[in-house]
Amino acid sequence: MNRLKSFFGSLMALATMFAVTACSSHDEVYVDNKDVNTTVKLDIATASIGTRAATDGVKTGDGTLNGSINDEAKLNNLYVGVFDASGNMLLYKPISSPSNTVTSSKITETIGTIKAMNTSVSKIVVVANAPSSTFTGTETYSSFKTKTANLSYTTSADGTANTNANTVNSQEATSLPMYGETSTIDIATANVASATVTLTRLVARVNLTINGVNVSDATFSPNEIYMYNPTTSMAWDASTINYAASADNGAESTEGTTSLSEKSTLSSTAYLSTGLINNGKTAFADLTTKSAHFYVMPNPVGNTANRTKIIVKGIWHNTSAGTDEVVYYPITIKHNNGDKKILANTRYSINVTINGKGSDSPASEVETGITTDIQVNAWDDSAIQNETFQ
Image (cartoon, rainbow, N blue to C red; front, side, top):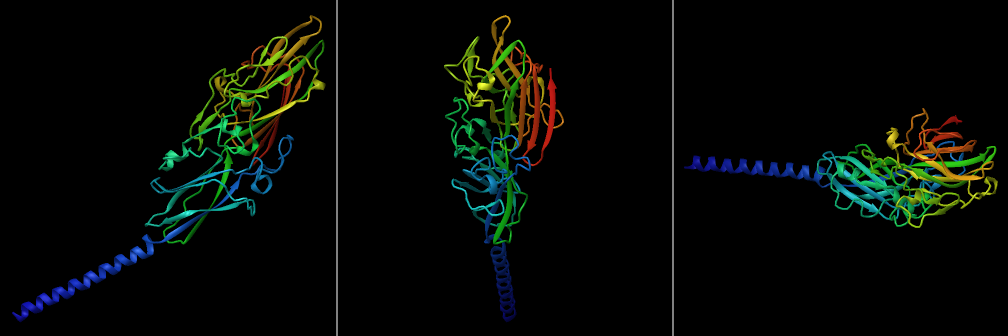
């Protein structure tokens, strides 16, 4: 009997020892891993314009927060998604008023606190200048980055509204949509985890300047400059780009034959037009407006049906015959190597000289009567392309 009691006593002691050891081990894991509050901080920068920043004379500054905080680098709002390795959202932080304190061309934002839970952050995605409802209900990395960005929101000063989309010449330099991601950062044991995100503009800037009209026995009066076949929506990560339909001429805002007037009803892409420069045959030298610039989303396809062009429209007056007709000078936008494409975060500066009669349709693929000098100035590179069309 005493032996039996001794046996059971030993069992009880052994069980107690295991219980204590188990609790101690569990408490250690909880303290060192599952109860660590990691504060996530981001340094946020914007891609620079490069050394050719002001060659087109449209905007000043270098495109970074240090040089253009209230221009093409303006951050009106930020939306930050923090995701684990499986793509599940750990934290979502909208920032309605980003910091204006710029240090070394960056701002710093505290995103929030995350419990480590034996995991690491796989991705941090940052979007700038978007409507507040864009990411409502989003819970995964894949759904967050593929939400739709719409170009029409560049018609508001902060990128949150598109009520001015059917108003000509209404885009704002301060509302350009931007996107960026970080690489993996480990939050398993850190008290503060920091990362840097560089935001890239989703748009290109197309600037056209008419240098002169050199024709004989005729005159040409530019009346409107507008985008043709523009891309107006895309996924934030550029995985999907919604190319414009063939022969989409919705941005054209004028009508008429021997004189032009603004249409009574304008389309939802009217913001990609200058509107009426002049309504008759005003001599080129007397025009106040000889240039225009627009922000457009990328069009990397380059096929005939979907090419994005910028159009110069106006009245061609044949002085000998005394006749007038509306003509178009369609200019297909090209990249450095001649590809008929538009890339994001790139500036296309086009200098035009009219030296002959244009086409009777903006859909024409032949660039006649025009000389173009195209400068392709990426926000991180630059090159020049010269072309002549007779």
